[in-house]
Length: 315
Image (cartoon, rainbow, N blue to C red; front, top):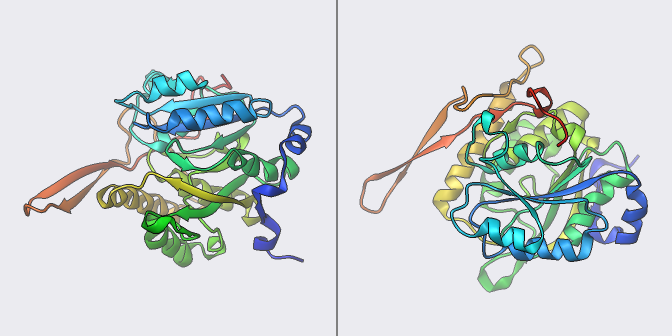
C-alpha cells in the first residue's frame, strides 16, 4: 500500500478543464478571494478567472475586508461579486482578518466546493483553481486540498520550494512537535486551498491568519490524514509582508495551535459568537528604533461553526 505522500500528492497538470467539466456534474463551485487593500492586483486575479474558468466556476466572489483603497471597485469591474465583510450578517458584528472573510463567505455563497485564492498574486495561473479542484472532484473521500508551489523570492527572482518565514519558523516546527503526521504537508499555510462546504461550515474558524492552520488541524482530527490532499501548483509570486506583520501572523498561529492542542474529546471545540468574542485579544509588543514599544492588539477569537449559527443557510 502506498504511503500518504505518494497517494495524496499530485500536480495541477494532471487535470484539464474539459476533464473537470465532465467530473463536475451537478456540483456547484465557488472561487472566493479575500482581499484587504489589494486594488493593484485583485482586478487581474478576478479577470483571469472570469475569462478562463466561468464554465467551471459558478460563483466568483471577492470578500472585501474593510479596504480603504479601491479594492472593491477593481474587483467589481473585473467581474466579481463583491461583498464587504461589514455588510454580511451585520447582526454578528465584524472582525478584521482573513478568517473572518472566509467564514462570512459561507453566508453569501451556495457552492458545494469552495476554492480560496489570495488577492495579491502576481505570478500564477488559473491552473491553481483547476489543480485544487481535481482531487475533490475525483475522490469523495478527500475533504481538503492544500496547494504548494515554488515561491518566487525577491532576490534574483529565484524560485524556492520553501514556505514563507512564518511557515518555516513557526508552523513547520509546531507540526513536527505536536502533529508529526502532518509534517509532510509541503506548505501548510498556503493561501490557495479548496474544501467541501459541508466540512468548512462545520468548523470553528479563527478570525485572522490562523484559518489555514486551523482547517488543516481540524480536518485531520475529524477525518484523518487521508482526507487531506496536496497539489503542486508550479510557481507563485505575491506581495511580501514586513517582519512586524509576520509577528502578528505568528502570534495568531501559535494561538490556534495551542488551543487545538488542549482540546480533548471531553472538552469539545467551542466557537466564539458575538461582537466582542470571549477568547480575548493578545497584546504583542515590538521594539521600535526610538526605544519605545509598538503595541499591537491581536484578535485571537474564533467564529463558531456556521452550521450552528441561527439563520445560516446557503444564500
